Amino acid sequence: MAEAIRKPAPPVRDEAPESPRPPIAPVPSPSEARSRFSAGEQVRRLRQRDRIRWGLFALALLALLVGGYLYLTGGKVMSTDDAYVEAEKVGISTDVSGIVQDVEVKDNEHVVTGQVLYRLDPRQFQIALDNAKANLAETAQSIEAMKQDYKRMMSDVAAQQAQVELDQTNYYRNAALLQTKTIAQANYDQSLYTLQADKGKLESLQQQAQMQLAKLGGNADVPVTQHARYLQAQAKVAEAQRELDHTVIKAPFSGSVTGVPSIAPGKYLAASTTAFYLVDTDHVWVEATPKETELTNVRAGQPATVTVDTYPDFEWHGVVESVSPAAAQEFSLLPAQNTSGNWVKVVQRVPMRVRLDTSNEKLPPLRAGMSVEVDVDTGHARGLPHFLTNLFGARQRASQ
Image (cartoon, rainbow, N blue to C red; front, side, top):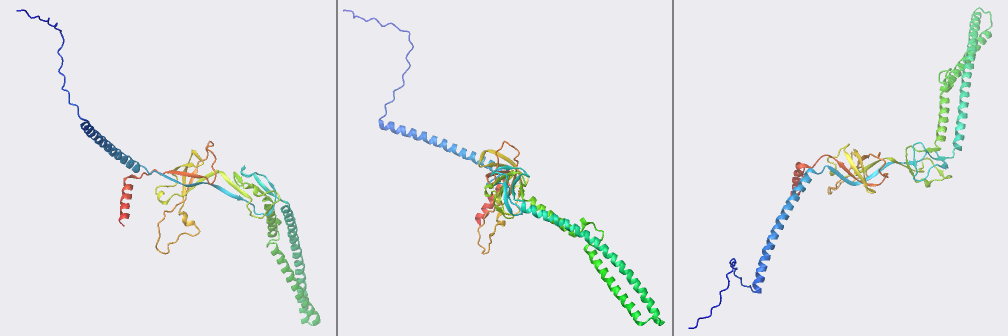
């Protein structure tokens, strides 16, 4: 029998056995794939939504805690923007009338205390002064003449007194002789008449002397410079000198002048007429009118910070100088009156004055009328009692 032809066996390879392959999943249909994708997307979105919800809840809780902390520890600073820069302002005038002779300053020029601003024509005032001085000299001479006249009157009184004494002696002699029938009745009557006439003349001289002494103030040796008439004339000289001095108008304090073009040489100014204004730019303050509910813890002496709208990059420091004892409404021309009983409560504003420190020359100049914002550090936080009071107070008002 013919032997079968055998194929040589393949060589044995020293290889690791192959790992079993996982079973191949069946390929899902398109509809099943879409359903499986939608279910997975929904689960992913639900998980993402839960994470966002819990994150927002945590943020809300954190914001509540931070807000509560800031509210309870805040409230130390009282802020108001109803505030303006104020300065001393005075209308430059004088109490005498005259024609403007010279104007020594220009508009918006800075002046110092005692600097001449303008002058009035002094001629009429110089004439009045010279007249007053002449009247003073005449009064001094008149008083001296009165003193000499009084001395003359006293001499006449002394002479008349001697004549009366002589008449009295003659009268007594004639009276004695009449009893002895030595002289006639006519001689006796003549001596009596002469005595009575000289006595009357003596009394008249004495009265004139007393009147002259009264004009001398009761003192015949009074110095001329102490007599009432002399003092009166001297006062007129002082008044004339004062009016002459007031024709030269000087700055009462340092500052800046404004409105100078309103006058010019040759213009007549009546007494007390404002020529222009002087503003004290070296000493300014802030006049604020915060609400009455904002002044709970504000006290005089507390530090304040001021920012000016014109200079937003700068700050001024100061202190609360005073708080008005009355609301601004109390000083209005027609204060509000509640006569009907129906009224609406309106929060009032109370003026407050803040003194500024303007010694820093690097800061820009402040001008009256500028709008500012004031922050006052009261040092009093709201705290939990304040929060509870407001909370229960609000509930009580709501229930009412």
